[in-house]
Length: 126
Image 1 (cartoon, helix red, strand yellow):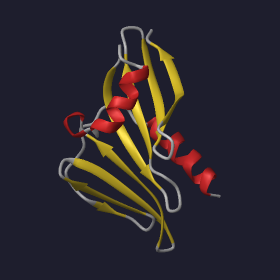
Image 2: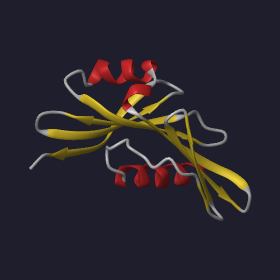
Image 3: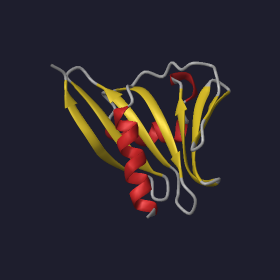
Image 4: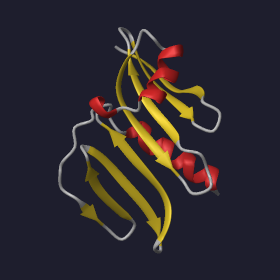
């Protein structure tokens, strides 16, 4: 179940654009609470009042350096255009990083339990 939720979260993140400009208003619905803290947007998803997972989006000036270092070791010729952190109970945080090069746009995943990086999406600019 936890891996299914992470897969869903990763799919939702892939649908987001690499832009990191967000509205400053907070929004609350039955299953979602969105807040903006220190320039970063965090969306907390819950089910019947229980925490399921959260997605924190980082502006380019607030990206965690340790994650940037991991990404730059493998993708040093790419510009980091945005990043999301997915937190889920019982699992190590996962970072989704959006990269842009001259001819491609990539999305990679960094798992903080082992600092492993994997390619999620690779788009060719057209």
